[in-house]
Amino acid sequence: MMYTDKVMDHFMNPRNVGEIENADGVGEVGNVKCGDIMRIYLKVNNDVIEDVKFKTFGCGSAIAASSVATELIMGMTIEEALKLTNKQVIEALGGLPPVKVHCSVLAEQALKAAIYDYATKNNLTYAGLEGYDPSEADDDHHDVVDIDF
Image (cartoon, rainbow, N blue to C red; front, side, top):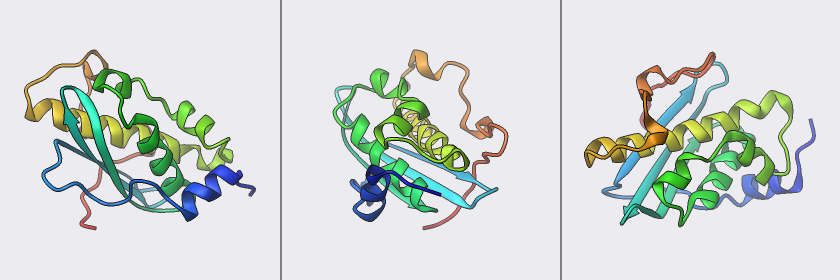
């Protein structure tokens, strides 16, 4: 299995690792099938993501996907960040092996869960969250899990 230089760079030197104390939104998703667990923390100011951190327990692709996703959404508005797709994560990494595409889906889902948490805490609604329920976000092999890091 070949990884792009960008995947290797984000795996070996991940950006925005850690957690944000008193984060405005926290999203956690896990994939029981492969054991990847991703948590994303958001700091939001005037609807703009001014800080984002992640903690990922998983393979190199999951760590790289988390890292690049945080870079992509930094400075975006909530509405813009909600439009981030796993395909954009894959493109930003220069590609992922087919067997690792689910890692990019996990990054998209963790971000959406964090935004959902922020919106719920602040009684806000966003078009990109209509009908979204993180407890039902188990798109075939993705399950929300509760694990302490």
